[in-house]
Length: 99
Image (tube, rainbow, N blue to C red; front, top):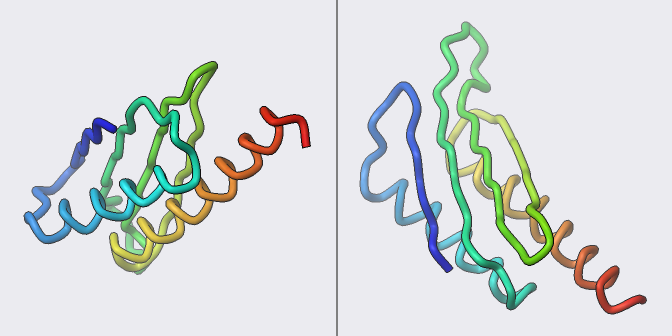
């Protein structure tokens, strides 16, 4: 699976990029036909503490799945976004199988 990571309004360090890549790669356990994924790491300019946004779009045959989560750290946002996508993938897989 090809993973593209884009950062907006900041430069991510290698540790964060590897963390996000490893999280997204784990989604392949739940659905074999993932074609690719695109991740956006955004730093929002607000006074709010929860200003780290992670958006993940996964391409699958017949469409795509999307998750956007915001929290205090990019790691927490990535965890939440991947968990949401995991549930979407499981639901999609059940729908495709007709369960």
